[in-house]
Length: 360
Image 1 (cartoon, one colour):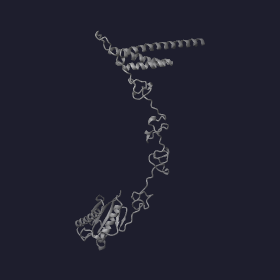
Image 2: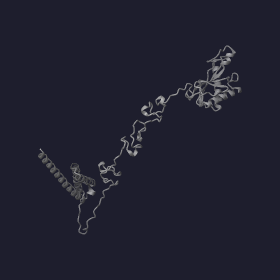
Image 3: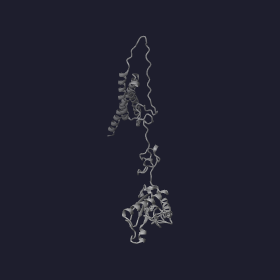
Image 4: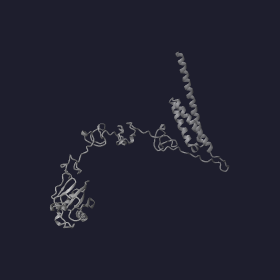
């Protein structure tokens, strides 16, 4: 049995030697053809084919010396194909030389330099990245390195040794983001990983209630049921005006000339304080609403109440309140708050009210 194995090993060695010897002969023949192609002008007529043949020939001979006959054979076959094509193209484009006795001197040979702009040893003709050096095995292109394997090359990875967590938050920088919203709660435990919130609410923001709608959360509002300006949310105290949630309550009525809409001077201080309220709360819009008693015709009362509401609005705008913040409506005698059968009731019905339309 051992004798048989020895015979097989000897046969394999002889076959390998024969293959290597044949490949050496092929390489010598290809090199001769390359030289012949150069003489025929392949540098001008077939520069790409010539360059590929030379590169494959060099690689094939290197692999042959290192004992890898399979890879060497592949490169030599490619070199044979390219040099054959280079010879064909060179013969086809070689100019016909005409000898003239009076001018026996041969023309100077044309020399074409093989360009390699990036100096990586791969000619530009077959270099896929002619301006960036790279190995022949990668077609002359550089090999991008990605140390942490996160798919972001090291040259643009801000954390080349720490892989990106790809959680949809700043994934392009190459750095992991264990706490996206910076609230001190790691994302895997944070119920709202992109919105900061306290730990007692599992990392989510607390949506504060605001009962009086003044824009100050109840937990910061010292008067949570009374609208007021910052910082404490308490209403500012005025001598003649009280700010309620839905209206401005005036502590005395606005006086007009009898049967007219001219505002009497004794009401100016009251209206000036209404102006002060509106300037203290610039997001407030108000409807000025005029009312009359039932004495007189319905149409006349409505016109009178509208004219008085317009007069109040005009006074407020003359003191700097934007017209867009004020509406004026006259209701006549349609909304009484007391009986029109008594003088005291009719006096209460003759009134001007300030209803809050909205707050911003």
